[in-house]
Every structure is written in structure tokens, then in C-alpha cells.
Length: 141
Image 1 (spheres, rainbow, N blue to C red):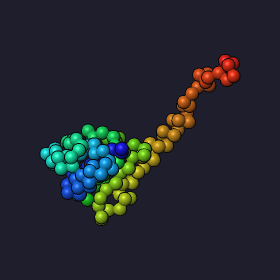
Image 2: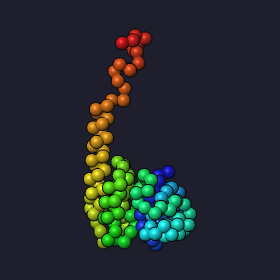
Image 3: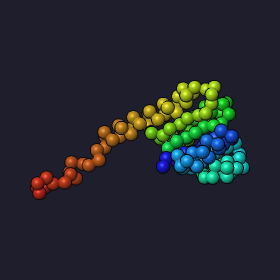
């Protein structure tokens, strides 16, 4: 099951996370709110997850949901990038009706750079060196 981290656990964040937890859509992992007490209350409502006090303490997750007030969405996404929490293949979304998904451009660019670096590393470091390859037809090299 994919993991979900929640940033901003107000009515929208806690309700969606609770529904997804109930339907076993995601394993709710870390929950961040404006205060640790708010995060604890959200975890109690959701029925799963761990409250965290700082974004930098959140564990990597498959899916990141930002349900903060609109003015905090872009700064939250930027903090995720700065804290190096977003990995290639992760899903990051916000629940604002007034902001476009392009507002998360820095996070999208960060993921693209990380994917390119991973592909480059794979090309430069093959998984099996020729000297370590198994013998063919019983003959060693």
C-alpha cells in the first residue's frame, strides 16, 4: 500500500486522509499541522499516522498532500524540496481551488533533476562488472 503524508491537517486534510485510511487507499504515515496539538488531533480523527512538529522530520512517502491555507502551499512545497524529501516517482498535490498545479513547479523541477541524476548514475555504474560476470558454458574468463 502506498504511503501518504499530510501537510496541513485541517478539515480538508483530515477528512480526505480519514476516508483514504478507512478504504485502505493509503497508509497514512506522517501528519503535520500548524501545531503539534493540531497534528495529534488530526491523527486521532484519521485513526492512523504519526504527528510531527516539523516538516523536516517527515519520512519519505509515496504521496504528499498539501492542504494548508493557500498562502502556505508554495512555501510548504519549497520546504519539501529544500529538505530533500521529494523523490523521483513521488506524487505531490495540493487541494486549493484557486492555485494551479504549476505553483508546484520548483518541486516538479527538483524531481526531474533527481531522475536525470539517477539515470546518469545507472549508466555510469553498471550493475555487474564484466570481470564479475558468470562463466559461459563452464569456461571462465
